[in-house]
Every structure is written in structure tokens, then in C-alpha cells.
Amino acid sequence: MTDKLNVLMVGTGEYTTGFVNGAASQSDKKVGVIALSMFDLRRRGKVGKVQLVGTNGKKFGAIREHLDKNIGQVYNMDTTLDLTCPADDQVDPEAYKSAIDQLSPGDAITIFTPDPTHFDIALYAIQRGIHVLVTKPAVKILQQHQQLIAEADKHGVVVLVEHHKRFDPVYRDARAKALTLGEFNYFYSYMSQPKRQLDTFRAWAGKESDISYYLNSHHIDFHCWALEGKAVPYRVVASGSKGVATSAPFNLTESTEDTISLLVNWRSTENPSHQGVAVYTSSWVAPNKSEVHSQQRFHYLGASGEINVDQAHRGYTVTSDPGNGYSYVNPFFMNYAPDEEGHFGGQTGYGYVSIEKFVDACQAVNAKRLTPNDLDQRHMPTIRNTVLVTAILEAGRVSLDENRPVDIVTDAQGYSLV
Figure (cartoon, rainbow, N blue to C red):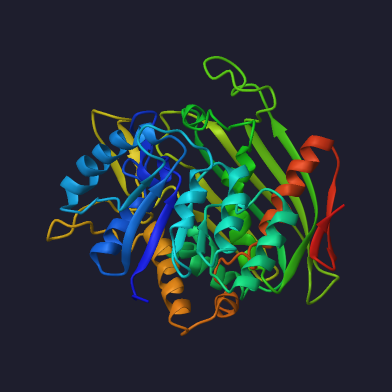
């Protein structure tokens, strides 16, 4: 087996290609993240074949042109796709199966598709010995998450969830400091995106998933990571607001919340007399002309200190006549500036690092230098280490739908909701 990792990218949308509604995205991911990173990792000798599968082959001509124009010609980058599926004249919602079937055990896939599709795609790959990187949320249902843990163990493959905030140097440092602040007491987080994203996500927003699954997953994972082995969540109460997404010009389904807050009670595993509370809030109706694409901040209070992080405002502003005029920018996620040789130069961005860590992990497991269990022990965002994220998110959805508190309890399977 060659050391290079062959990768199949599942999903052709914004995060993978930067191509949305027939053109380059208008968000902060104008040339995407996954494809660009994989092309660069191929240039650097870590990745072999780069392949792409979606549901509508009729998009591939425009996607290839977009990738060549906005990545290939900008970074002197080879944007050749070794396989696209389905054929350019076909539409096939299950094209991922035939694309995965042509892979070999030890190859890898990335899954950046609508939330309800993650489980079926990941399971199909895992059962064929394929490593998996899946976007957050890994799945929407706790039972499915625990099934993926069992299948990953059975087949000995790497399954990581793309929680890139774990590789943000500020968040990594904040987590290390939180570990020194004694028992957890209070956590508050807020994350938003502009309301134009409602058009980007029109196909699934409010029907197949919600804003909490999409954005709250970032800070819930950070908080679970910070409290790993120290505390567990045991009760969730959710509340949501409505009215913007369901009105003109968006007119999304009546079930679409604008903003969702989850109130979560935590209990210390080291000292049961200590309890903490967390409030995770996310929204996709922020102003279109905000100074940032995504507001992102949190406050952590421990028994002996507190931490405040404002990820959106890092002291770097740009003012120009076109676009929004005045904006805070974040090159620490994806730095799209070329290097001194004209190649892509953003290898230290935490969006890129998250993907390279996955590639490195797959190569190490293939070469038997590591086992998937080693990744669990290293506190990587593995499918096992992220199970409480899904528990909290699903509990929040149940709480909204049934207008009641939902408890998270330990059982023979791991966790369940009651």
C-alpha cells in the first residue's frame, strides 16, 4: 500500500468546493475548504487520488471550471479530479455507493452533505474498511452515533468529526487553561451567520436540520472537550425564536427557528456536589452587512477563574468600497493568501490543520504506527469522543419538539435520552 492517502470527497457544496447556486460562495469560504486542502496535500505528497461525488452530475462541468479558475490558476495548483460521480448527464442520490465501492480498504472519504445523510454514508464506508471524516454534527440521533462507534471499532477504521475549533490556537489554549480553573460553574456561547445563509441552506433549513445542529455544535464540542473526564451533561431545556426565516423573502417552512438556545445542566464526575450550567445559542438571522461573517464568542467560569474569548474580533480589520465596506477578517481559519512561490500558503489555518490531522491519522493507522484507540486517548475529535455532542444536540431538538426537559442518562449502550 502506498503511503499516499486516496480521498473521495462526498458532497459538492460550499465547504467542499466553494461553489453554491451556480457561482462562487459569497461567504468567507469563496473557494471552499476541503477540495483546496486536498489538492494542496496532494501537491505536498500526502494525498494520492482526489475524487468527488455528489448527487447531480450536471453540476460537474461548472464545478471543474470554478476549481480551475479560483484555485488552479490562483495557486498554480493541479485541480484534476481523478473521479467524479455520477456521470455529467446523470442525477443519482445514491451515487456515493458506487463511488465508495471503487475505493480500497485504507482509503478515506470526507462527508460534507446535509445532516440526515451522514449516517448512511458513513456506515456504508466504515463497513468497507474506509476511513471517514464527517462534518459536524456527525449525526442527528444519539443511537446512530453509538452505532457508528461500534462499527468503527469492529472494522478498525479512523472516524473523525471535523470539529476544527479544536485546532484554533486560541481555543486550544483556552481549553488548557480551563483545566486549571477547578470545578466548572458556568458557560455561555454565541455563534451566528448572516441571514443570506438561509438561501444557501434553503434545501434543508428547517426541514432536515436546524441552526442548533449547524452552529451550536461548534461550542458544545469545545465545552465537552474541555470537561472530558471532569463533568457530564444530564439535562437539556431548549427554546427557540421564529419569524424571520418563515417570512419574505425567505419563506422557509413554518418549523424553521431563527435562533435556538440550549440550557444544559452539568454534574461533576469528581465531586457530585458541584454542578454547572451552560447556555449555547446560535442564530442564522444576523445582519447581512455585519462586520463579520460569523459572530463567535464564549465565556467560561470555573471555581477559581474565568475565560472570555471573542473569536470574531481579533484586531484585524479591512475597509474597502466594494463588499461590506468595513469588516473584521479571520485568516487564522483559512488563509487564502499565496506563499512566496505562488502556491497556497494557508497550511497553518485551523481549518486546514483539521483536515491534515485526519490525513496524518489515516496514514499512521494504515502503517500500523497508531490504532484508532490511540486517537481516542489523544483526545482527538473521534466518533467516540464526540458522543456527548450528539446527545446534547438531539436532546435540544426533542425539547423543542415536545416542549419539555430532556435528561441524558447512562445505560448499557453508553447514553440515552429520557
